[in-house]
Image (tube, rainbow over all chains, first blue to last red; front, top):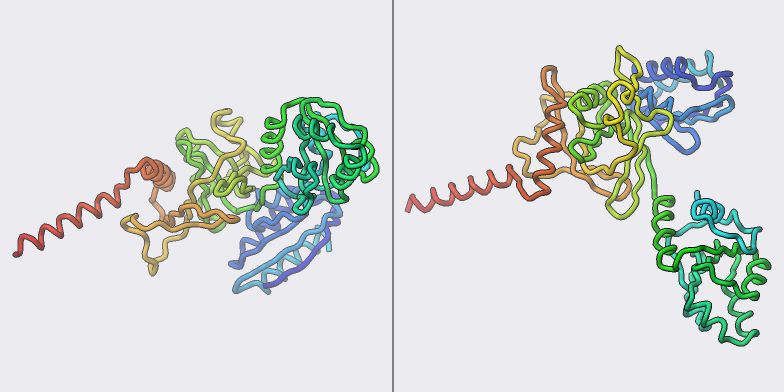
Length: 87
Length: 311
């Protein structure tokens, strides 16, 4: 299982559009991918779940990937987040 | 990690704070309420100090009869550093020794209007709900003919589409995609949507739709007890699916097992109808009519008669 913690630095936080891009990226992999924020964990492939977290600027999220392509998935998600969302 | 403090009780039940204000943010870790009758008689061996202490008319009348010294000693023992609060019912007068002891140890001393039994059951209900274990499940919760059905399955298998179809047929949506579940009493799972996405449904190709504005207030529910799990999965040629329905599979959420049906998905299968019938059949079973079992019994009778005919 792969696990990584990110801090969201984007001004708008995990808003609808960036959340969608992240969910679409996660959907390309078969691994089970979860995102956790403030003790609540949801499936990263579910747009409604991710948006229900309401992660704002400065929020910390933990992403875990578990499955056959967990390494590739984590790499792609890391790139996606670093591009515009945070670090 | 505790979520409830004595402060929440003050707000919720409009209690009057008499003394010990320092401790109003003390956490409440158990829903059990203690009525310290034996303690007032001097028996502190098993004193449940972490519980809320509730003093009613009998405890207070008994206290009145004690000598001041004894009273002071016992009331000092009642207010420990772990006690989340002492509540006096029926708007009764608090003994000055108790006011003092509560202030000294920082245990909030509260007063309620209601009778002891009443306040006790209200507190237990409230604390049970607040302290219930919770979890989030990826799935869709729909109320079908009064049965709370949790649809689960991999992303993109058609959970939300099935829910939309069910709503069109007059059933109610509770939560889409993410269901917050709490176990309240033993074997009772309550599901509700995260606040931000209630009444919403995400349909691929359409985006996010608001079920309540589209279909009306009758198409949604704020929460629902979960009694059945229908798991959708892509049809796997190598897997044997239930053909009879005699055996029951279960899904475990927190510490509760609920019946689980696994329904294979293939183009052309009308999932909403299948899920609807699954819920109806489940209701029927609870009313004591089990079609699969009855059929199996009948078949057994015929087979037994067949043996008899031979000889």
